[in-house]
Length: 209
Image (cartoon, rainbow, N blue to C red; front, side):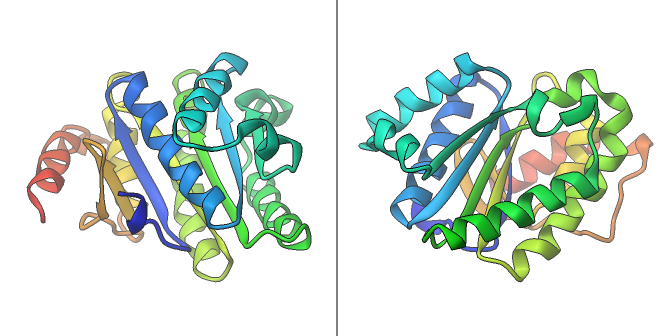
């Protein structure tokens, strides 16, 4: 799976268990570190970061050195997605732009970010803004040495939000399989009444080669 990761990709990961979440995120970030990327992982808590560090170590990453050299940066939702207590698209885009420039200035080949989207459970007022933000990221990554993975918990996040995620990411990971997202359409914002479509979309992606 890691060999398929490319510059500029915007990946939607649908996961069903925490073990799957950690395994996919760790492989993605380990691959980025080997490519000379600065990697930025945003999670819910310090405990989540500890689990990710353990997974990275099992993949052969020298985690203490990666942190010391700032090849691996860690953030939590309260300080990144929800700085000042709310989500703001412009602030997040500035943060990523600044992060890409800083990574290049520090000698890295670019920036690879990876974020758990579970914060949306308690911030339904941000759902529409996040859909727009996800669409903007595709444009950003087309012209910069960067890429990102957004991790969506299928068990807990609303089906309508997952449906939007499947429309706004250029590639997708389902059942730990990374593939181009045949359902990607940045021009389409699914109507609220289409929430049930997420099930058939996931099944359709599983069937595609």
